[in-house]
Image (tube, rainbow, N blue to C red):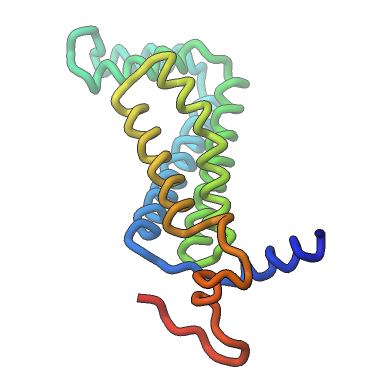
Length: 192
């Protein structure tokens, strides 16, 4: 059993992935999320180390003249500032480090997809599925269009990777699987 599993792992991760439009979009999405998370984490670390965050949040609210009834974006900014204004510096640091680590994971997934590595598809699938319960919980707790759209995008990514890429379904010797592998000693044909 172990020998067959190792043989399958070696075979599966040795196959290059076919880069489609969907894979390109997933790669871009991963790099975009990585950049936002990394920058956000760094900003939070700098802000929490240089000042008293609740006082800073109040100053920003005063400077931006944020008051209720002034539009959707102002409401979003005020909500974020209210939440971070109530956190201790230690809590903000933990959130910042978590955001940067998650950004590193997203960047690692993007690099793997960019290099056409099969393991990257599995990593994207597992990482996306791991956060679905949190997204569903957030959506049921306080639904927003943004949360619904994020959940829909992640469900589409999972569905695409399982259906189109046949992850976990192909085995060596399977007719569809063997089409993707070059014969020994023959270079692989580029995919279209």
